Image (tube, rainbow over all chains, first blue to last red):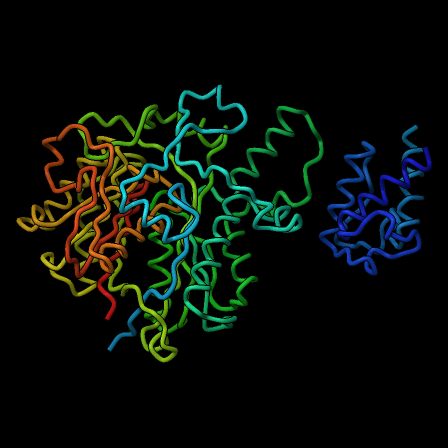
Length: 87
Length: 401
């Protein structure tokens, strides 16, 4: 399960960054991957669609959200948490 | 001496071709761009024909990111603007330039698709860019960003007269001194299930073809596409040695103040007469009129009556055709595509025909250029647009100075 989540998220972010999944380092920030604010919103949408979850993310204040987007790894962790909560 | 306005670039994406030249060539050849509609749920429609742009692959023209932000109507406008700017030879344009575009439905495809998701499919989430895709000013905004245009820019929406109203505004902005260069025209793409279903309800659509001025006509046919022009102040264009395709010499608007869908001859007469006055033209100067010519009995009779009233004896000498018979009715984009027929008449002396003309109508007994293009030396033209809601806009062009 963990691998599946991680793989999916990496591929979603890779698509926004126009990179191959293997080029996305887990500790990279979205900014360093060239994903801008619109790309972030699209990535959140894709995550919600893929996992059928609600991501608590407000684009007005991307830094101060319950959903930690500071790196690829933090996003994976946050999604895993949401999935665990959803049961 | 008022500032004069000329056309120095043109671009189009229409059912007749993927450029202004292709579109004009098809008009000259009397080719039809109307075919069977292809989209989801079309089998649930009564009306299954339209001027649909077939074989268009958005991924050939735009990146994935651009597609996420641009409805089909915006994509058409961007492509037309790109062509027009390239032809004009202008670089990044700055604050003495603007964009005024017409559209009626805006991002209707985006609305249709997403309403389907939330209502029919019961989804509770839509793509994050639904709003920036569907907004009516999306096309004007993207064009401003692409070409570095920072002056007056906005969108005009007056149903079937949107493009003419938009181009009239652009003309006034240059003539009045607010701007030197304007990208202007219009775009529309409402060939989708919801778009056509709504029109079907009005019972004004034809199931089998667009036959303006022909006695056996039975309604309008809808199309999609865009045309965008570069309007430029004459001395500005001369100073940089630009090619000039025509002069925009006058424009007028009127409101029928009578009925929300039925046309009114008085309102049309008022707009046509005022456009001639504004252009400083006599009725005898006009060699060609691109008619609104929707192919509904109500429009065609009212429009021909209006032309007879304004032009008197000269009505029998001029040519008036409806190119909607070929590209169909592009609603908010139609006036822009139709302006190409006026430019072709002025530059090449080729008058685009009214095709599908099968049976003379005694109520439309002018030279409607039936079925085949005609040759004529023309020094000035008019382009009519009479919208639902009774809002009329008529544009006068003359030969390049």
